[in-house]
Image 1 (tube, chains in turn green, red):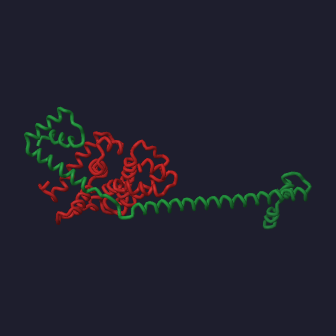
Image 2: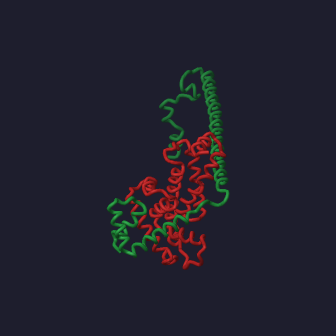
Image 3: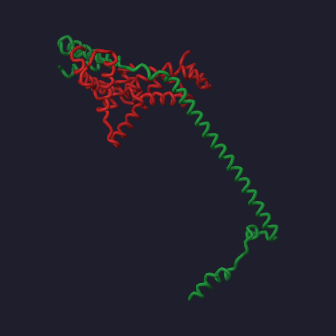
Length: 144
Length: 182
């Protein structure tokens, strides 16, 4: 069979051929029985394929889709509620902690009468000499 | 009730309206997905996912294309993803290749309709996914070649050449079953 005629035949089913191509195909069909048989085979194949189309999924497909949507929505809502309550719990802990720290700072200020960082945290100011004469040095001297 | 009215009702939370849409478009989605993946459990999962995607993106659906085309586009993309996943799983775990999964029976036992359907579906399953997609959209769903090209985002010429090659391959595969009776 003529390759060009075969190509035209396949395109004929899916694409609008130009008038010249249509004429060429018709002439080729008139001439060749083989090409006419090929056309019949293509028509039969295409009919067979379109008849093979599935029409539905298993029964109650719509119900299963709705169930999946409801479950997903509930799960999403559940997750959102969980994070919301987590946020609320952390907010409470943060407020209580901030209040406790503030009270501690005020207490230290009042007790030491010193309005400074040292006073606020209740720490004594260490001098450079005190730091250098650390107990560790003494122990090392003893060891040596 | 039209699709547009059902979509509008579903957007306002009417579950029954959405269920009606699912029932109405199940045949189209089933034809696409089962055509692409064969009649298997994954096909039903992909079918469900198609409608779940529609539900989640209902606000984004502007009605520029018909709802059927919108669903077909989702279904074909999800099916192609599923085929890629199958291929990856096959490579990783040495599972059967698509050609082995869709093994055609040795002979055609009888002329029953369901058996014919099964043989054609298996033959389609032996095609590469890009050829399968054009066959499903053009010959099963009945979209024109131009619409198929738009859905798959490929040029019209590509669709036409894939269609022609796919039909030649299918003819080869199916000749042992039907011989010259077609």
